[in-house]
Length: 353
Ligand SMILES: Cc1ncc(C[n+]2csc(CCOP(=O)(O)OP(=O)(O)O)c2C)c(N)n1
Ligand SMILES: [Mg+2]
Image 1: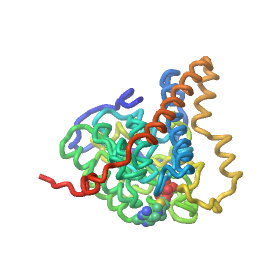
Image 2: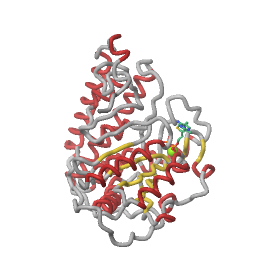
Image 3: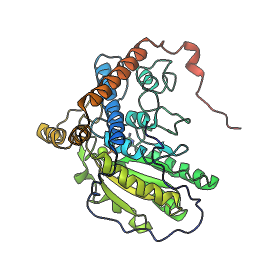
Image 4: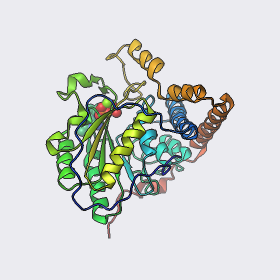
């Protein structure tokens, strides 16, 4: 995993910072700053998410996964680019479309897939399912099914960072639909007031279930949503892992230097339906096809690697490795035992001391 590959500064917070930089309009420009090896690592991480999600879709179709399941296919560059900006101790929190975030933080494919199939080898012992997995070790705080709820929780995690003054930053991800919620704006206010180290990342994939973002929000540039509180923001091409990383570095540096929150609006796209049951009547096949053909984040990096002279065999090695990891995870998720009956009443209530 690429976590910590390029950590931002770790200056102490708690003092007034410089005035926030003004909100920019239009997606950030691409920068060719990654080395071939870093690009290959990004390709590797994005491909793992893509292949994992494809396999999850297959297992769902076979009836091996129950309940809700929201795939992240198409949006991989967002989490992989942002993860490149983090250091150990930073936190990630997101919605129910969460498998990609888990894998990006370095959580094991086996544990995530086995949770999807409801087996005891899963991250929540098979009792949480697709939307409810956590790893304190990897700094992953869920997986939340209530739209927008994780935004105030992420702000709380950032409050803890500020309280401990440990230089950590919380990445708080949510969708374009969630971005219309009242608690999001309450979080902006508190985060700005208390200069909390939180990056609000709006994954604008153009739809909230079957409703186009254009029809759901009067705000046409979500990166400016924090302007009443002076929160700087940027629109970013979320299909371009390099642009994501570059903007992420700016946002992380801003937070670590004690300047308070930052907003990144990732312009991205989901190829699959909202969840596994989606009539897909709200957009045309052509629209999806066009994004896949012209803006696919993984194909873009693959082409760049080849154009820059990487031998195709190196890429094939990665393809084969990822295929093996996902096959192994799927096997584990089907052979790991179901939770024992004795687990029915465990993990229900945690008594705080
Ligand atoms: C408080 C609440 N209201 C409604 C829902 C039903 N719901 C689930 S997902 C969703 C759409 C959210 O869209 P967006 O924030 O754009 O995220 P995306 O699914 O596109 O990643 C809705 C309305 C819910 N889970 N919670
Ligand atoms: Mg959306």
